[in-house]
Length: 181
Image 1 (cartoon, rainbow, N blue to C red):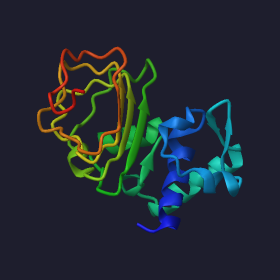
Image 2: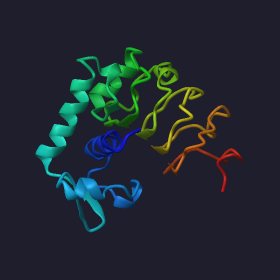
Image 3: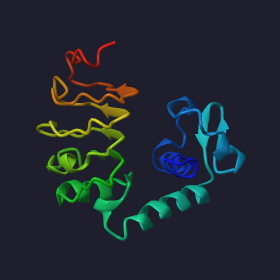
């Protein structure tokens, strides 16, 4: 992957998922984005003007040609729910964030779309209860799942690129030996 492409991916990841988060959560190749005034670091957190963030969101939506299942990133709850409920996830999805509201927590969702998301690098979920997750991408670099309801991760989940695993208030009793430190 060339440098311009990598810079664009990093910019879109920050615009969609990491604004306001600790800068250490992202690779240290952020200097070019700072030099171009696309992001700033304030008190060790990523900051971005809301108009620049909206530009990033527009880039993501335009690349999907009006098909949410073809977006590279999904961060709006309604968009993620639509993709999961209608089983339209594709291999183009690289990042997904879902934070359900109390009204949506009991939402019945389909896990099949995850089997199509084989390039998923980033998954951030809060309060989502799925019956089975044997289809998580092994390309994941970041898995953040607050209140993960199951007692274990799927045995088929062996992501060699995993950098960060955050499972606050989860039901996990023991990590697979492949993920243990």
